[in-house]
Image 1: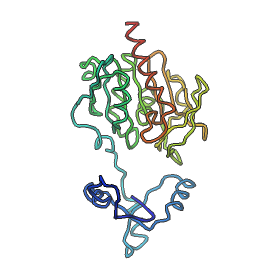
Image 2 (image 1 turned 90 degrees about the vertical axis):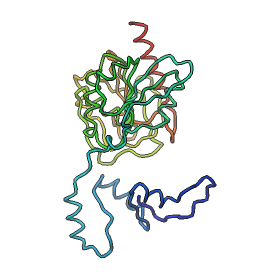
Image 3 (image 1 turned 135 degrees about the vertical axis):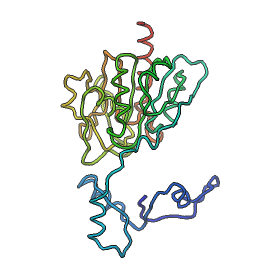
Image 4 (image 1 turned 120 degrees about the vertical axis):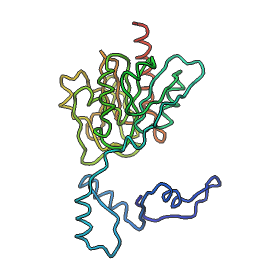
Length: 284
């Protein structure tokens, strides 16, 4: 964590630990006294780059050599995914959805529960056979950290289940759906961060303000011949923000339609997912 000025005296009456104590508990490094605005401008202009916290006595070249020799972690999804299946139930349920946990936000569960979905949350490395044994009406692929390559088992899962049941993915789930359909993804020079990104739904023309946090994007040229079509774009840089495959009843969004925190202008996508499950059930 990098901050300009650290406050070690929390004022909320519900507080039980300081931020420093929590960071120690989870082995998270931190530093203060940094011009965070200058750092943000540097990352904006030059893109994502490696860095390290070093003591004042460490020679510059020694620090640079350590940075160059470091290997980025590739286990981000496996570290945050659940270890075994668990359930989130709701009254008067109409559908059963399997949720693939790539870094689950509880707000996603609330959005699905509120729409009459009983949920079975499963680890990221669950197989298609294990999912089908649960007899779900739909598959939801969550947001999460890291790169698409960190979640290859999920790519295989989506590839095996496409066309067999409705699929909805958000954030990382959107990228994994694209990869499963044969499209490619790339790291952006400057990722999308914050809760004020305007996105246009190309089907209706509606513009939604969305919450985003991603470093990767779908390469639009690679979508040709995959069966996926672009349905949403970011109005600031034209990046692909949503796809669908009508034939397979597949839907994806690069942003967080549930907000939490952030705007909920695009929360209607959860209703679209429910409608897909209704359509498949009606035509069965």
